[in-house]
Length: 364
Image 1 (cartoon, rainbow, N blue to C red):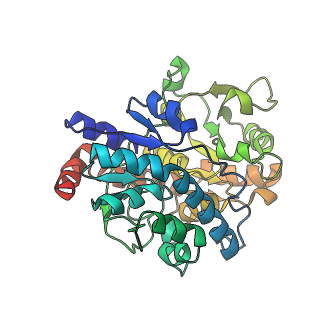
Image 2: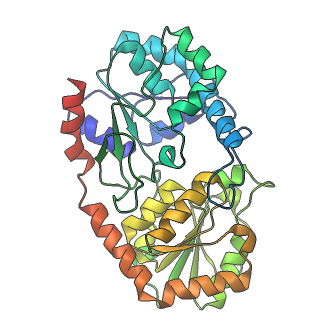
């Protein structure tokens, strides 16, 4: 969402990013004005764990996850609505699970725009998100508190940064927008811009998986061992608090924005986060996705279906199997060719600056 926020400000519009207190510094680091709303709510404990074999999370776990994000919205709602009543925004742009956004839009009677972070998870199944939310007493109570019977949880419009050929069919109106990577602030190492003598494989697992440590893990050391056995140069992109024990010949980039590292890589192995998937597509490199959380597994499935990479259940990710899959990615041109085609499709979409006019018209 950050590049759209930048584009709106560059066009002369006022922007505020409302988040729980723990996220304020993250927003400030992006250069956008932050607004602290509500109290921090623990979301890890309530989100679903393993998906079933068909790629869908069990229904009870989906409801449990939605209820967790309703609690976040409940915490933010009073501060957000109070601020919005004074500031009077013409448009509210929100994350798919930030239900305080469409709630505030409903109270103020202004349009809301949902901004996806990848493939649209709300269409992954036979039941709509609205019907699932209607089952939650917590959501009904939140709406009643503000005199509402329902809200447009899918927004008046949806911004989709996912290339259309990788996206799932829509239940709502979508506006394509080019994915412009924002992976946090950072400095590019000099070596990251030069091509290595052998294929460079990036290994990363985001931040969410680490928060589930002990219950859900990413087999980083096995991936590194497999890539080294395949004769690749290995680059581990992580943070200092997540750094595992690694062989001395492994290159490590700590807290370096991913988009600064991938152009010189031949492939990436990752956990399946939406931002990592899209940043890898933007770089035009094939992916091996070890997705265990429901949204990660869903992204892994879309990567495999699009032919831009392979998926592997983390429980099957021993060194021989990992090496075999990496060998396919590095030796079969079809994966790189498909990734390059997806990059071109992504670059053909309207930029965030192009989409500003759409949002202006909606806000009027």
